[in-house]
Length: 481
Image (cartoon, rainbow, N blue to C red; front, side):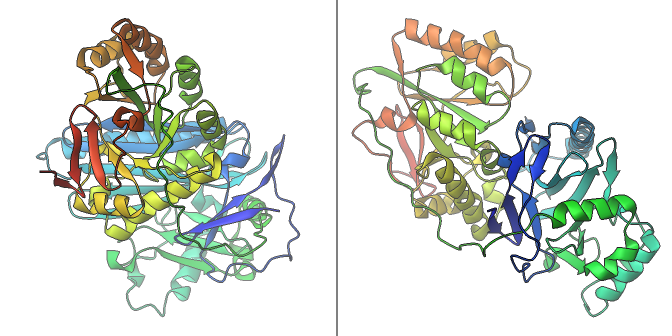
């Protein structure tokens, strides 16, 4: 039977799969629908054979860009459309911020995704965009659909936007905080239409779109019978695709798994040997499998984002099987220093849970996205029994660098005890790994996981580490004496 994971009003469905798509075979009346009608049910990406997670990443002195999207087999036009839209968004964001002064925290754009449906006839992707420009995050959502031949925007799920606007306005009429004059028959306003598990039409709005940002997520659900005359032919097809996915049991609410100190094999005594730890961020992605193959028996540390880890549990199992250490890199790669404590906790705890489901144990290490940390981040990491790991050597492989250039950057910066930053983002990284391994082995280096660098000095939760040569840097964000 399918299993649901609920977080923040969103449900993820672990579905059975077949060769022609994702098959949902639960009886329609077996489980009561969620009590919150705007709660959405999403397909578990791990249940979609061949799905790949793609990342658009760029970090400058002024901005952070981290945009992810799925490549769904059989829906190439949908993936291509999403990528084109995201590239355009990133370009507009960079142009807007180029003239301003550099600030800390940096301006940031972040996109994460969920699958609303996956089948030969109907696929859908919900994109959640966050913009941070110095004070707080502004979030927006949009959902793109695919009918097996063409990309369908959300407004085309209904026959008439005027009728939809009237129904939505009537349903929100009792909310004094809503700007009712803003509810107009506008395609841009109705760019995120979806369905809950009982077939109600769910209409979502962006922050500040029809009311103050303090309202949080604004959404309304139009009951199935009331939505029926509004829907287009494709809208009814999308409704059936989502409605067929039914939860079986209420979700189990529990604390995140508690991290335990990783076992240190002790094959290399880094007090004597020249040790270095290779680390990889942003995965798992399309190049992770090649990176693992290139590493062979060389052990490394992988810091994974939760959204990507949830999509590729097979790669997490391979990492664990090959002797690598898996660490936490936040759920969606937002700069944690820009978030309130409860959101920092959510970013880390959700990732702990999804990694533990695949590897059998939660991480004991975390790397903050962009390396950005402060007292609050370190404190919450400590509460989750996580040590904070940064780096002292940057391979610079997230751009257009060649394998030879990456190797040169790594080998020129390494010293005994170094922690090297690499990424799972591009084809040059797996090509650089054999060059790095040979060059450093020729200089007498041994490759270990991060905790092995510290040997008999166990890494402590809430403490920040940049390299074993410098020992710990800070505890709970404050410099050590």
